[in-house]
Length: 382
Image 1 (cartoon, rainbow, N blue to C red):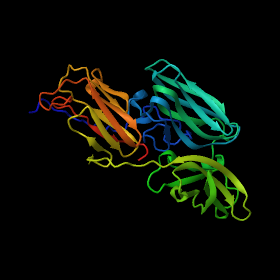
Image 2 (cartoon, rainbow, N blue to C red):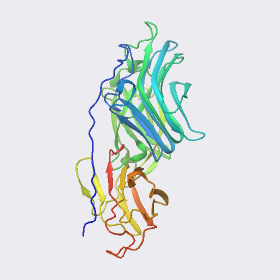
Image 3 (spheres, helix red, strand yellow):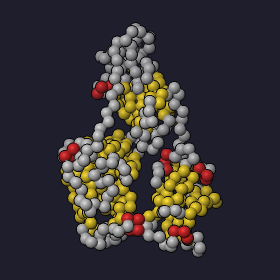
Image 4 (cartoon, one colour):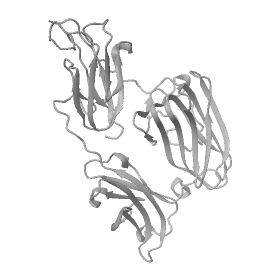
C-alpha cells in the first residue's frame, strides 16, 4: 500500500555573464568563473569542496563557494606569470556566509620563497569588494583562495590580477614561472594504472630535446624512470614503481651532462575503488547506491571520492528519528526536507537508524515507506 511518494528534482542552471566585465589585462584565466573551475585546481580535506555556481554573485555573476564541514579547502591557479619585482593589483568580490570560531578565509600569492597572504573579513551574508596592490618580489607562481579550519563557507566572484606597469605583463606565462615539474592530477586519489601528466613551467635551461624528466619514489630510490618531454609535458605511470603510497620525486635533468635544473617531491596514494553491490547507474555522472526501505543498520560501498546525496522519507513524520553515517550525525527530525549531501572517500559507508517506532507494515524500524537514496555525483576526482 502506498502512503506517499518522493520526487527527486534536478536543475540545470544556465551560465550567466557577469554584469561587470573584468579588465582586458586580467592575467587570470577564467577569472570571472563563467566556465566554472576551468583553469583552476581545487584541493580539500575530507568533507570540504570548492563548488561552482553559474549565477548568484554580484549582478548575478558566477561565483565559487569554498565550503567545509571540517578542515581546509582552496582553489588555485598555477602559472600566473608575474615577473619579478613588478607591481600588480589583485581584486575580487567575496561573501562570508558562516565561519566557525577559529576559521578564516584568505588569498595567498606564492612568489617563491615569499608568500603574500591577504585575509578576507566582512559582514556575514554581504558581498564585499577586495582590492590590494602588491609587488611580485621573486616572481608570482600561483594564486590561491583558501578557507582554513572549517566548518564554514565563503564565496568568491570576479577575480582579477591586473599589471600596473608595461613590464608587469608577462609575454609568456610559462617562461616567467618558477622552474618546476607539476602534476596535473590529484596524486592523493590515484586508481587504475596511475597515469599522470606532469607539466613543466619556467624557462628551459637548454633546448627541450636535450632535457629528461626523471621520476623515482623517495622511499625506494633504486628504480627511476627517465622520460622525454614533449611540448612541456610528460606522462608517468606511477603504478610501475610498485608502491601504494609514498613520495614521488620529479626532477628535470640535462641528458648530456646530468645537470639538474629543478626537483620536487609529491606525496601520492592509490585508493581502492570498491564495487558498489546492486548500484544502478542512472547516467554518466549519477549512480543510485540504494533506494529501498531502510533497516536499523545499512552497509554500502562507495566506489569513488564523490558527493553522496541522502534523502529519508519517514513513515511517521512525528517520530524523533536520527540517522548517522560512519558514526556522525547525518539526518534527523529537524533536518530540512530530511535530505543532505556529504563528500565521502572511497570505501565502506555505514548508516544507522534510531528513534523510529515499529512498522505495522514491515515489522522493522523503518516504518512504511522510508527510503535512503544515495547518489554519487559531481565526483571531484573521478
